[in-house]
Amino acid sequence: MHAPFTGCVLRTRILRTILLASLLSASGCAGLDATHELQAAADTSRRVGGSIGPAEAWALPVEGESPVWDGTAPLGYDDAVAVALQGSPAIRRSLAVIVERRAGYVQQGLPPNPTVGFGVGIAVDGLAGAPLMVQGLQMLSWLWKNPHRIAAAEAELRGAVYDAAFECVDVAMRTRVQLAGVLAAQELLKYDRQYVEITQRTMELVQAQVEAGELPELELDRARLEHQEAIEALIASDYAIETSKLELLATMGRPTASTDWIAVGALPPTWTIPSNEQTLLEMAAEGRLDVASARQTILALQAELGLAETKHFPEIGVGVEYRRNASGRKSIVPGMSITIPVLDNGDPAVAIQSARIDAAMLTLLETLESAQQDVLTGLTRYRDARDRTTVVRRDQLSNAIAAQERSDAAYREGVVDLNTLLMTQRRRIAVERNLVTLELSTMQAMCELRQAVGGSFDPQLDVVEPIEIEARSHDIEQEDAS
Image (cartoon, one colour):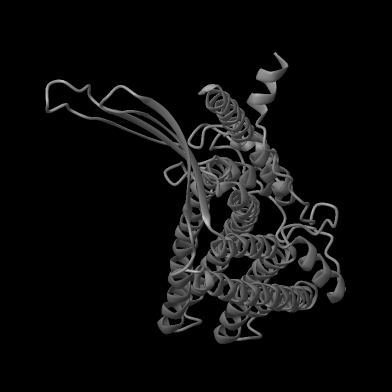
């Protein structure tokens, strides 16, 4: 009598075993190793330049010694960027987010754990046996929910990769600007030393004339005051170099390193910058990493919308229960649980996700418009600083130096008075300082424009490549091969 029932139970057990095995095998394909995504971040970050690549820099300890700079050698742009890629805590934090998002991607691919319940009864009459119940339950709704969760996790993982590369672009930009600040401070110090020497010679000349009775003592006081002001400016320039170096070292992740080194490099450097506005705007549209990250946010929210729409469907779980009653009879009872979306039909969740998608679309539009503004503003600032620098270097500087030298000679001959001499000296140092300031402004505008288009003026590097998320990690592939 019980043979058909026994066969049904066996078939149920076999089907249940096959189902669980398939679930476990499907969930086991994803690995926690984030090497592929970290390499994608390194490849995307190659646009920042540097004497070593991002992957090589990240393989080094964040607080370890740099292979490209020992802390005392002259420091150039590329070496400074390489040290910053290695030592910046902000970059390492963004890489940790990639590892976290990889783990989240794996987590979303796992099925829910089965629920096991059991109970043992206690006989109270002293004659009957103790009842026993063991129950297992597995939810199946994840089969149509997890594809949406996985899609959202993939988009978030890609967004983390783009965010890490964007952080590298930002750190590289600040590093170059701050190194240029050190170069500018060194130039200002050089000019201030020259000005101290000029005022020293003037003071000695006036003193000799006063001692000879050719000039009143008041003229010597004025010359001394001018010389003391030049010394004060020299002291300020000396400390300005120290401050600029400390700011750069902090960005490079070396805040307590020695400042006993010099910066080397052109101010500004020679970069091939496209002059056409449309070309730069197209580069920004294709290469901006914050725009790419904003697009991934939309994809993640669209996947979340698909997940919210599954709330319209019932939650289904299947299970099997083994029972032994007080009289010793045994039974296996397959079962199913269904949660019907009657009170919460999922419409609020869908509305929430739809609103979030609309907000994300507007955020993307805002990011695109901000990128366009950054490009046009950066290009305008670059042209302004470049053209003004050309005029000062080509015309004003040579005229100011010639006027100061002629005034000095004329004063010695008694042709001009001390007022004229001091005025031409002040004019020369003012022009020299203005030239350095404009050169620094040019470099700042160049770096801002480079960041605005995506991090590089090379169209081959300044492209956001699609990132394929690998379900199987490198470690799992090696284990399978062995």
